[in-house]
Image (cartoon, helix red, strand yellow):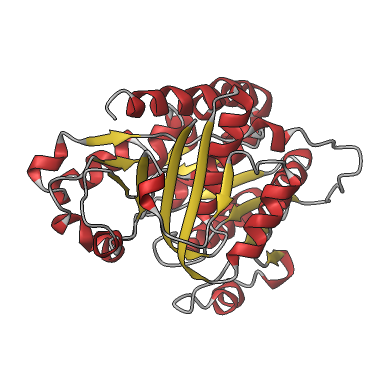
Length: 342
């Protein structure tokens, strides 16, 4: 039994926790014996929710929260965006440092990482290229890619009871902030309405940061009667929301300025929802320009949406082949590569 200890600063039931759950599901589906424990420095309300999810999907054998920090009990320690680990352990040769943050101000620690690390882990080749110059030169050759998977078991949702709208949903699910560039999503939707008519409804779901006055932006664009906001929803409800978007022939849109991977886009693709995304997501769609637009070019984004609406069947077929990029097999392949260097 291979034993891994993850160390993460906050238990928020956010993106990192979702990644760990997906890894657990991949190990379970592949019948690979890996015991993952996670130690949080602070509980921001996520521990209870994470334990509930683990219980619901019978993942206890693969993922558990621990209350005591005992790194000597594990084969390897993965610190996820938590440089405090270097104050908690005497040596660094057992540590993989995982960087998952696209927020530049939150990864200033990279320049000061100790050179005796086992290695650095990032979730995509593109993100590795984005940050490679921030990494100390001796560690650049020890920077490895561990791609994320999307658990297919959570996307086998029945459509029998899904409500149908009289408008086509244009949806964004995720954090609403400056980096995610949600205001550009609204700009695109507004232009879409002008170009193609009043056939759409804008759906935004996720936490709103203080730096974005979402309601003010919506009012400015006169979209209050064509806008639906959902507060942060639990992981297990995301597939159902994506299924509603799919059944109503909607589109998922992301105007993000920076991503380490882009898990929400991957989940949309995996569930069969067409996407239009800023060009930084190119690694998720095999660089297929059908799904990509240049940041700031809202005219191009609207044209992509129109094409997808007019050619939905062909687009969905493309999505089926792209979704293999997020399979459990891809993650397990990368994981086995890491094991080969331990």
